Length: 260
Image (cartoon, rainbow, N blue to C red; front, side, top):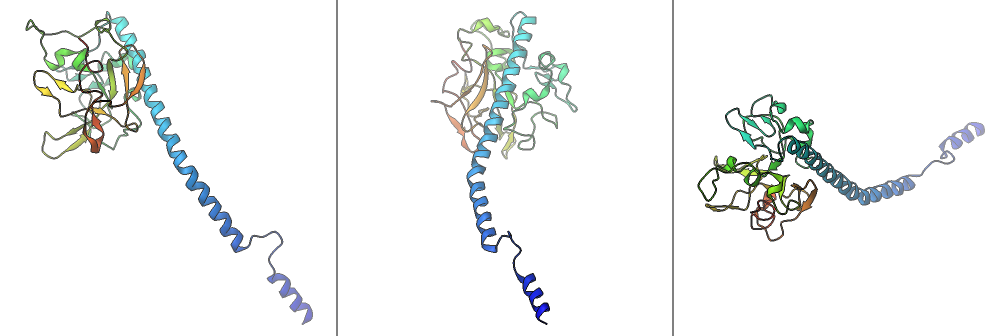
């Protein structure tokens, strides 16, 4: 009996080096505290990484821009060919044929047109497609005036512009983060927008349907006509649709959306 009791008592003791319940709870509390400190930093690191990827995309579009202009006497490309249903990002049909666009033949990878801070599934696609096309808007107002059916003072149709037409190319947007809150069909729908529209639409007046999308912590990323990509804040511009971060950089077309 004595030997059996001794064996039982030995087995009931905690094994050498084992944690007690209180020690385990302390370790768990420390891990939880560290996670609460690190998670915001990790989230911020992911946000920064997405912003860097967006600027890289725009830089790559700038390289494609330079190649296209080199092959086309410094002209910018058309926003759309309505006769053939081809936009700068490709055909307006499923499946999208990106290579039908003269500009996209220089871009190559369609991923360069997609900002990671506006992922597929967060918006409904514009046009007749059901796949990602572009989350960057093209500044057709300044670069492809015929897209807007604008005429000059002489009443004649304007032609597409050249890079040398603008006195301050480092401030003029070519592409920028874009989206639109479409209310034209009644209920509002959040969509991508392939057009980067200006704050003023002469002769009609102020534009109340902005497409400039401040999706990077209150900033918009843009490619400028000199080939550099950077972040811009609204400045004295209007945030017209705050629930979707849509507005304008500045309250006038010049210098970012157009230049005389």
